[in-house]
Length: 171
Image (cartoon, rainbow, N blue to C red; front, side):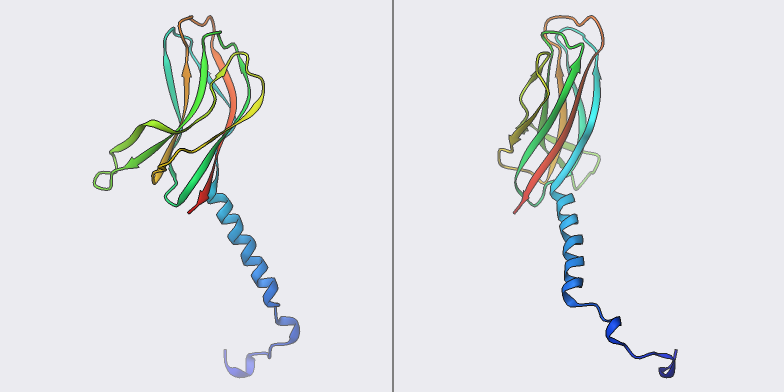
């Protein structure tokens, strides 16, 4: 294209600077919100068998990036249960996790939880449960749904319905 083919800019071609800033601000805020507000499980149903004195862990998220979080909150939306025995309980745990830089197949996690939800039992009604993170928060987090059957054998399959979200505050 040579100089003669170019048309001159007119006033209508120009976009006001404030409008450009507003567009980029919206995009930036949306990206920041996605990074610090992580939906781990949308309203989901989880099934467990009822073997007496059993402990079952389901990993909901393996390596959530928390490298620049100063603090955080675990939010659990408890919708309900189906067929849980009187000795069964459910809890959501958040633990620090680390992938080895030398060997990415090596995965480490702390045994103590950074955050733990309340323990839900058969009589728990629908509610939202929150738990603040207890420092230190590692560079990655693992979210686990823990089901404990207790001493009484369940007569049928048991189910819980819940949603899980992590909300982090940047450094």
